Length: 364
Image (cartoon, rainbow, N blue to C red; front, side):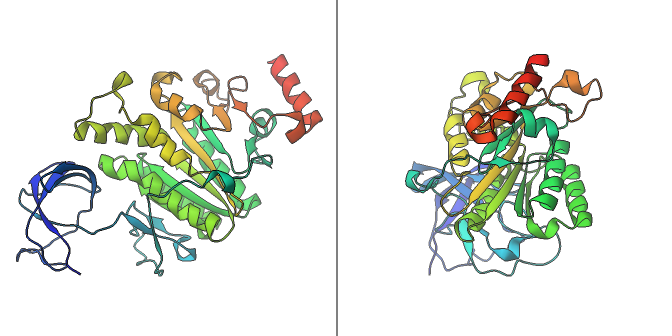
């Protein structure tokens, strides 16, 4: 099948292309292709011109380079073969262990489950961390936010949760590294390999050295892989995202590249929409559940900043990590009074649990 060929008319992370002459797949006017760069179309400018966002490095990109229309969205591999492997946002393996042996691929842009397919969250998800399980318990199939500034222990707490839940829960986990340190991702992979939980985990990384397009889409890639096990396998999956603020930050960079007018505090005008499209897919259905734990960096320790504030409405529980507590050497530095949970009710956790939790808060 012939695909449309375009030529690059603008360079940079937000590139524009205009239609050229049609050609067969792989035909690019005699030039030698040294690497493939995926660009996701964001705007149709008219007159057969589109503007897209690069999903990889644009170093060496030249005006006039040939661009091929794939005719479809970005897809990632799904299925049992993805367990124990490391991927980038395009579903390409980055662990030097060869390609994934699976034919099935799903697009990263998918609709959220319909309302009639949803099931309420009325079951506690035990973490093994006493302060969390008592004062702000997590809901199975719910969404949890770990709020904190720089260096208060968000990533360490997520790693502890992964270790506890992989050993006790025994289910499948997906970890999305969104715009965080590559060193932390490498440490996590080695720790999981040593503890034997890697074979039940999918790791997807788009770290802080990646272009904004990659950081904006890597969360969707990891979520798509997790959704497969919920929708096709009927399983309960744990989804860890570190850090959801970097997803917002990448969206802000892309918004500027596309020339959109900035909104409050310089964030993108589409902030709530982008956050909703991601969060609404993380839910429990009649088939299975995706329980999400998300680290949320709080700029300047300000919880009213639009980025962390946009996440609040989607969460079932919030665990706030306090700098004043971490400075005392108390870890995890959970603030028991600021942390909340929507399932801390007598009819869900039991009367005794509810009364003990309230008594502890009164003493504090």
